[in-house]
Image 1 (tube, rainbow over the protein chains, first blue to last red):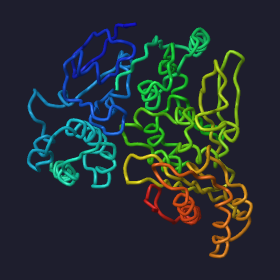
Image 2 (cartoon, rainbow over the protein chains, first blue to last red):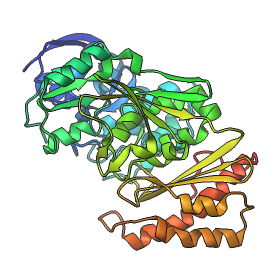
Image 3 (cartoon, chains in turn yellow, orange):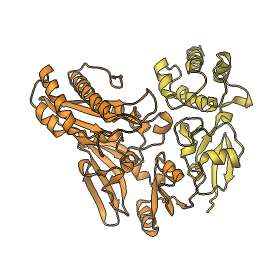
Image 4 (cartoon, rainbow over the protein chains, first blue to last red):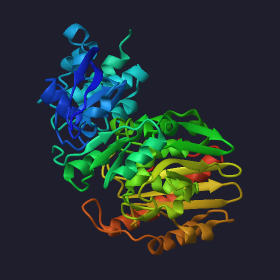
Length: 155
Length: 295
């Protein structure tokens, strides 16, 4: 029961024929080879599969692939200008904000949505934006610090 | 966990077309935000022969305020509710409630109507909609229906929706005169979690009160006995003590992996007093800011 869909993935038009019961996460990773969204809990709890649909951060494990027909999907890869590290990613590097790194793509996508709406969030707003992203290594402090430092920087 | 079960995926462009698809299949499932549905598909607790994606029904994707009623269409997400000007201005406790639901990544997709259609005992929209005497609107082949929210919840995961029907939206009437509310949700940590217990208190002009509980009975409910005790009176320490004594009889909590029934009952008493005090303070123009943590 496949159905052809067309959507924009990281600024590039894609045409795919996913199974009706395939999730967006499965299509991104297994069909299209986009590996930044990670499969952690596969039930919407951990946030490691976070991608953007039309500028909103969503759980790609809780979206059917066919649902993105006609929409714009962005993964971490699409948030890196010219394939290079973004300023936000550099701040994560500078603050040693990961150990295993599994949660990082989802965290950066979630933070990117926040910064899009609110370029200078306070600590509580950052925590709220990241309330659905689990990290089992860092204890969150270096993640929050990286975002605080990045958001406080003069443009 | 991949979805094992196979199904047809259809995306109708009109309500009439959606109703036709609903009638055509034996076990159709309606997809809006999908944050609950996808998990049910994955764990096999539902095995539909068709998933009917209603996100193409633009008429259901609107939020409007007219005639002292807020209309929330079935496709309005919790994020859109939080951002809506009418909600911020006239129903701040709705935004306060919506902000306790999941996390931004869930709220960007999940809808309030989906929340009441899933109708799990811990649903966060329940106490709020009960306190506002909301009305659920449905559309089916037999026509439209308006169902008072108090008649909507029939049991865990059971609602008054008939087969072949779609919920089109929820109507939330603005109470007469000034009003203020406070929603407190007890969770295990300050992040994405299901409610162990929740209370919504509303204070209205003339010392009238509405109180609703969630997660401490098979369905969310209004605590009419507590409201009767409080109505028309100035709340003082003695009255709070009396109201708290009524909590045990009002609620029917269970012990599960998230909390014991004793802890839930104790916290319901604490949350009742704090939410009432906050609602009263907000009605008077002070009180804690909406969204402030009260636990």
